[in-house]
Length: 249
Image 1 (cartoon, rainbow, N blue to C red):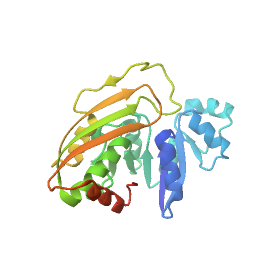
Image 2 (cartoon, one colour):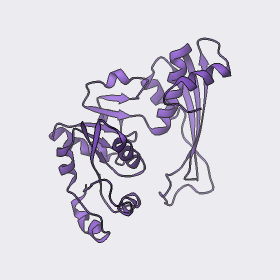
Image 3 (spheres, rainbow, N blue to C red):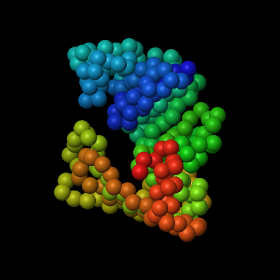
């Protein structure tokens, strides 16, 4: 039984905790965060199905006033785990890495961290073997994970030479309200980081792409135009996707 902790209980952290809790070969030791955020308050409303650990001791009074039961500190959580899934904000994971090294624990970092934080920039299908036996992995971002999964699926069947990626994405997660992009579209410099990340994971594929931020908090639109090594039809692609265990058509 692998003992797992989740650091950072936000949009990604919630999904990770729920996923680990469903696994028969894993035990979710607990989750950690720094304040009584919306997600943490929702956890309390659910009856605290997961133990909560305070990652910022000076915020203890805030958590107490919000009625959040605390089982210990982030260090307490780390010491009880075999591996930490770090879903904290970009830059925080790199600081947390010092604790993981101190206690000789493995960790998986979310996509917002720099690639240098880990031994391997990791995707669960396209370069799975490279992650075996490593102490630190950094995952591709959520939308990069999905698009690489689709490109890798086709690549394994017929080979892929080039891809052009267009992403129209929300500017913030649901509940993450802030002053920012309003009544405008923001286009990032091409090629997008998703295209660069794909080429890092799949260096034999030539990729480019654009990323457009939109002033909404729900959903992305992702299109991928691919040049394959063999001629294929739409029906072929649908068949490839239907055979894949992690792609729903």
